[in-house]
Length: 503
Image (cartoon, rainbow, N blue to C red; front, top):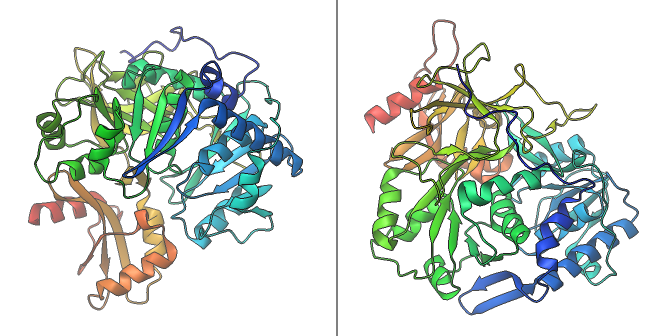
């Protein structure tokens, strides 16, 4: 019996007292004139020095406190793809508030449920973004931007374990779940600097995502800033290949679909400054990895993780993953592969990945009326990822232990999608699952029964009223029946296997 890592292994403890925003910007405060951020576009770039960024963050903190908010109050972020998003996020943290970033793709009913769940003291709203039906006051962009020029707030220092921010993830119960992270979560991300990124202060990291995506927020902004590097974020629609070369990106981070788009014309990519790429959010197909290597001469290093603990298994420049594996536990992580009874399995045996309760990056818990609740089996939080460890210590990912789907890097519960579609008058039964439509490409598919096949446009319109775009099925199939096991339980796996066998 063995675990992947020793739960008692030393990882430098988070300093105390601590403030996440102060930590993120500390390295940059020592180099105030260095460029912290470039918003890159075909016609040039908008540049933010560390001095300008820090002043905007601390001014925003002052403005939020002047608005009457008290430390510990929650601030719901409904901001679009602009630098206002990370400034507001860090400004709230600087002042001791608890920011709750959310996707602008969420519909009115979806964000209303979240607002009633977290009871925000303030909503920060961008233009054209769905707002909750909730009594919390709303502050628009003009008022938010005016705060950036205010005098700097004091850093709100406190225990590293106090709540820092809340993010939402789809849970296996079918509804998005509020994940409460402590301020110390950002300190634990230092494990990724060498364990995944190979990140240095001299790097220029270009992240292909939008400002208001948590993958971009962490990997594309917070981590480069914490080490004093430069973050590059492309303006929507900017040609990524050109941006990578023109702005001397040394590290590129994206989901697999972005790599596929860059490779679609089959031409070589001339990226002389690029050292390597990073991928997360969904499994990177080997065909995409090989094609990228052929086109650029560079490697892609992949990471496996979840909202509850960020990434924990990865390949890195210092330790590439053997073929077919997900990589190695990041140094400092406290992981094990567990049997159904919660015990570490023998080497080579399959089981569910567990994170020890002592792991410094593990969430405080899911939000409840009485505080964060951390579900454990013994001392372990179960990730739901099935895996096995080889003789060399590398870990192979075997898929989800449940039926969670993946849409462009977002985890989506089939139950949530099924509930949104089940009230269509022409549907009597429905099941949703992720299916592979061609090598390296998978989509959310809805299989339904009813008197007759329904127009796909009508189903798409029904879904669009109830679900964010990334949660909406891309494929609909009318079926005479849906497969069930001997106990009458719906078998999404049988649906997926049958569809892929016939494709």
